[in-house]
Length: 86
Image (cartoon, rainbow, N blue to C red; front, side, top):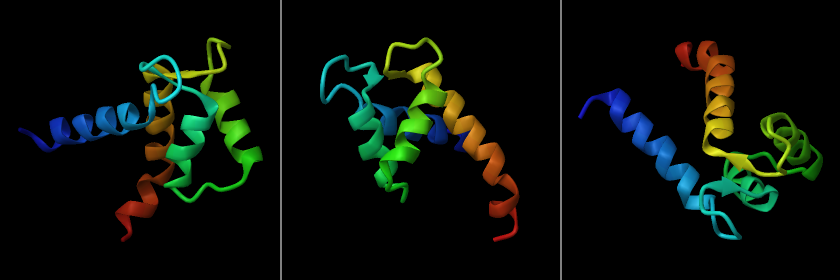
């Protein structure tokens, strides 16, 4: 398996580890997103609210996998330079 395939599986697994704990197993509710993000050191509720608002492109108050992947892509692009210099 290629490194890219391994990374894709990791992203899919991370999403499903948190999605569906409360309701639809294919979407993250705000509480599930908060739990996932807290593992990434984002602690305050206001930040979680803003992230969910930005991710929720269809306005259903949940984050589906497509919205989650867009988030991962934006964060990865924003952090690229930081990780290149490590």
